[in-house]
Length: 139
Image 1 (tube, rainbow, N blue to C red):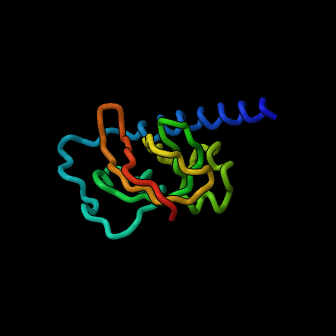
Image 2 (image 1 turned 90 degrees about the horizontal axis):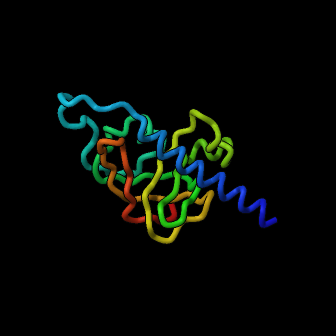
Image 3 (image 1 turned 30 degrees about the vertical axis):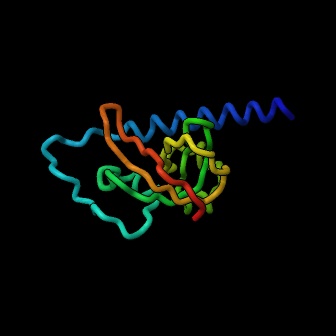
């Protein structure tokens, strides 16, 4: 039983690292593209699918709704799209095309499979996009 938990924990940790690489692999934004054409003030929550598809449109402060797919204590967790989760559960994490967002968070980790609202800051640096959570709560 303990061995199974260790294997599962290692697999989820590896998925977190994989997701970090997937979001970071989005191509660079051209320097002459000007400011983001996306909304600058959001009055609604955005989905994981929307942010993963066009992260440049959501740079800055944003609230993302999604389901916790995996947790790495002290580092953060991975969000998957709520609709994807309803269709295939946590097995979506192993599918290549599943939208996911790695979330940097050092607070108490949310439970895997919980639907949450995450307020935070989406930024773009030299190594790709990063979403730093400021508040995590239930949907």
